[in-house]
Image (cartoon, rainbow, N blue to C red; front, side):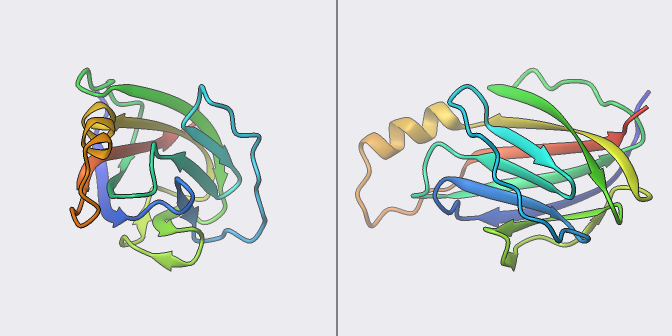
Length: 151
């Protein structure tokens, strides 16, 4: 049975609907071909999450696992990607500038699987449709990204 080995959380305002999870060794640029049917994209030392809006703050939880964890049934959607982590450490940031979470040690440098899970999108869409612009929309859309070694 898979064991959780670490966790870090951060609250972030998506910039142009994007949330970045960077490896501490990130040095390259990555511009995926964004499609409407996906919300998670990855490359060496980076995971992009796409939010449904930039007019809120999302909660992002990063988890390190020793093996593939079970899928949570409460999530609206999930996607799985593979990536290389050159240092084995990741954090949540706002468009590759400001770190908004502690650094999480996922494991040693190497190949990893990341499963991004999202919830709260239906509620956020509803709240945005009837939103007073002075209202703060925090922690409605929530992402959980679980990392484990690729076998």
